[in-house]
Length: 234
Ligand SMILES: [Zn+2]
Image 1 (tube, rainbow, N blue to C red):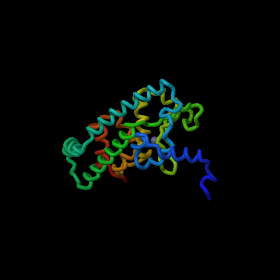
Image 2: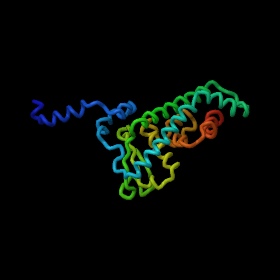
Image 3: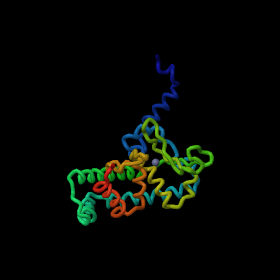
C-alpha cells in the first residue's frame, strides 16, 4: 500500500519533523529505562497546571534537594566501612564476617547509585503536574500529597502533586519530593520489609526519603549496621 494513501504529505512531514529534531538535554539525561518516554515529554510544560507561587516553591525545593544530593555524594563514601568498624563493631565487640562486610559494601554502592541517578535526573528538568486534591481521585481527599504513575512496570517521568502538598512545611515537602524523585529516577519501590537483606534498602523509597534530612554518619548508619550485623529474621 502506498504510504501517501494512509498519511497526507503534511502529516508525514510533521511526523518526520517530530522524530528528527534533536533531543532536549533533559531527555538525554533520563535513565535508560525511561528513554521510551522522550517523545511524550518533548514539548510539555515542566510545571503543568502549577500556579506562579507553586512554581517558585517547587524551584526552591528542587534547589535544596540538589544541594543535599551533592552533599550525600561527597559524604557517603566507602570509608563508611571503616567508620562502622570503629564506631559500632569494635566497641560492641562484634566480630566481622567477610560475608556481612561484603553485603554492607554492596549496600553502599547501590545507595550511591540511587543518589547519582536522582541527581542526574534533577540536574536537568523534572516534570511536575499540579492537581487539585478535591478533584483528583488519586489525591484521596488530601491523604496523598504526591505520586508517580507506573505503566507496565515503568515509572512515567512526571511527579504529580496534589494541592495538599503545598500545605506541608518545607522539610515535609522536600522529603515527599525526594521520595517521588527516587521512584522516578531510580525506579525505587515502596518496600515493606528489607531487613533480612540490607542490599534491598537503596531500592526502598521510604528508606531513601530519610536521607533528605537525616545525618548520614549517625542514625542512618546505626540502623543499617544493626540490621546487617545483629538483626536476625526468625
Ligand atoms: Zn512511594
